[in-house]
Length: 322
Image 1 (tube, rainbow, N blue to C red):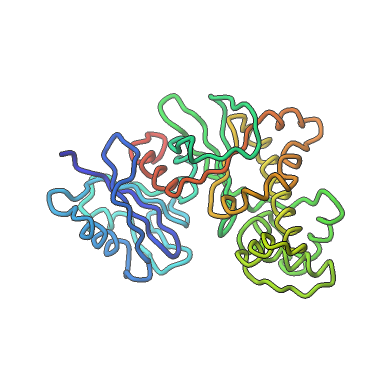
Image 2 (image 1 turned 90 degrees about the vertical axis):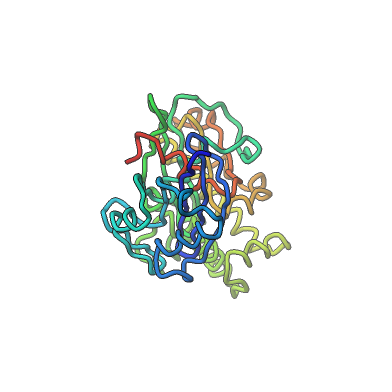
């Protein structure tokens, strides 16, 4: 019986762990544990292994874990929870011969090639170039952006901070929205709009422009109201998707992502019915002299629930990931 490897996708609230057989990518024994229940990473891993009865002789000796924070240094400090650890201390405490760490959105990007066709929803048709770069982008708590390039040996991830580029209005409505956001935040990045809180803020901005009192405070409430026919909430959702089309199109040009665009995260699967009613595809391709370039590129929404775990499994023995 081959010894399994440990993989994980760890955010501010929950730590998702799984086991994977070396040479495969299918996560097994997936559990999600609340980070607040554990003083640190080591204790959470030990509890996970105890729950799935993989300890002692069967305990993993290799691990690849993704974290929602910077991981380039020896010390990892979680952004939205209390976990703080040195990599060598974790490796020693868990008796690992291999311990890799990567950013959570890098893991999302690396997981995309392993997502099945039945978990990809096309929202803009096109023809992908197999050996070209791919863009992976995801509005969620923030706006994650990464590239993916096919190398000679394995997929090469391109970590990026594209969510922090400056928001560029394309019409009079967006000029007015920019003023609202600038008065509130100063500099306005695209992440200020294209994230969960951004959707709620965008609704409040629309209410302000229309002289209406906001009735909804959370992104879930705004989406639900749009689905129930609230006109301002519906305008908000459609504008959110139009701006997302603008940003995805710009990032596609910057990266040369003729291999396709993949939208990850928890927001887009909930808005799939709204995409055809929005100007997403039009905005994605509306790039002047480069209109034809973007018009050929397909865009898909990733609905797989464990993309980050797939990416951690890919990174485990990917020579392009340190």
